[in-house]
Length: 172
Image (cartoon, rainbow, N blue to C red; front, side, top):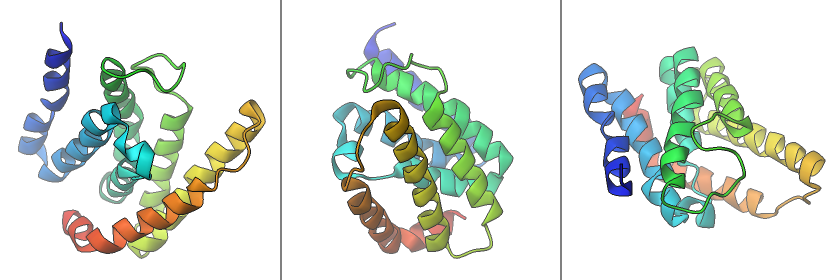
């Protein structure tokens, strides 16, 4: 199978999901855009867009534990598709869930448990947990110092939420 076929096949799950639940399809499409075309071009990493975190927020609020399972299994598949086109940004094997996927599943459950709170509060808590867990992991295993870009990414993602709050809330 060539790379173009893999790219096209990776978006095909959107079609049956549209028949089941358009919200699920939109969330999958958002994940696909983040992980495959934008991931290949490294766009989110350059400017700090957290489309995966926004997807986990929506999955947690709308689907709870099912959303956590979805994020845990689908993101590694999409990352594996991305790795067919771009140089891998980690040594983790493609298509296999890893530490970051566990963190995504956990923050999905955080969104589920906080579903009655304001969406900004949920996003802020999710980002803080996600950044803190990755910082601790990086500090312990890679001796990496604190990356000031995390603060800028946090602010940037709150601004994105501010700009698109109505769109995001319309999905919920």
